[in-house]
Length: 253
Length: 230
Image (cartoon, rainbow over all chains, first blue to last red; front, side):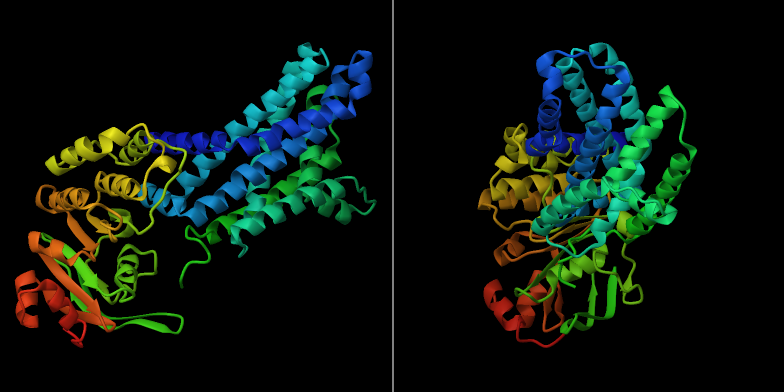
């Protein structure tokens, strides 16, 4: 089993790193945006505090985690299905869950490498390399805790009958709408919980909770809401996984 | 392995109507028939890509004991041939013995492609790699759908030797579809002729020629298409 898992993990990882465009989209864009939006600090050589740097990274963490999940997991899964790769993989492995776990872990590795690169570049930019350890710890723990449930929730995209080309549009829309919604604050508890179900808000709140756990006091209301959202994502994810088809949904039937 | 009274349709198009056929375990089984006769559908049913009607299909191994080289089988284009072969090998639970034909195939075809990425292979080379990878898996039943399509005549013979060696040397069950009828002259095969939604003929080549009353396999094929059922 270990041998099979490693072989699968390896091919998924090779494939993930072969997609240079996705890598650029996930890393280069946020770095450029981070530099532009913090231009005064960079130009005037201001000193940045650890807390400020970590909290400023929440937005970028959410962007990198969401685009990686959508482009390198969900879209990749659609491609594997429509190109027929899944048929081959399932046939030789005989296990749907082995495939899902190894694919997710390879994408996790990919995400952690991206986060490491992003954090390294930004701390170098702000001459705050000393904070790299704190930043890495926060982002990696947040990635480990919050990305798997989000991925499971986003598996709903695999059950939708869409062509591969249409997925790119849908994914761009999801990213855009998620960022728009993330700015909203509601006074109503239910509405707040619904807003928290949107990817960016969920990831940013998750990141903040981890930050609070490590450096200050935890906002318990946020934590409970987050756990509820995690539960919703996981439950829906399990239903979507059971429904997942290994053949293209446009196959002759 | 036997199919009895199989009925199957794609929505409104009926593919099989009371289809009956037997496949022999210790012989190479070759399914022939016109385009659109249902050869691929039959393999999809045997493997389980299409839900297998248990009552109509008897004594076929379970899905986990079958490996299927389907048409247009493709894999991660960024991987090299070596990486793909290693991936397939690592999916076997234990080390698998190789046949002489597999060794020859590897030395003559695969060796020179070993460091090439799949995306750089020609159609025929891709097909050869996929057939080879399928053959190195350890399973009870092997299904090959048109393994010779897009292949030159020299490699065609190597592929047939490879497929035949699975039956002769490894005592595996093999079912394949074929359009290159002339190749049947050199094979010890059990032929299943699919046409008119039924199995039109099953038996060996000499029996098929006898039934069609000819010495020419192409004429036999033409005549068989007009026969109604086995």
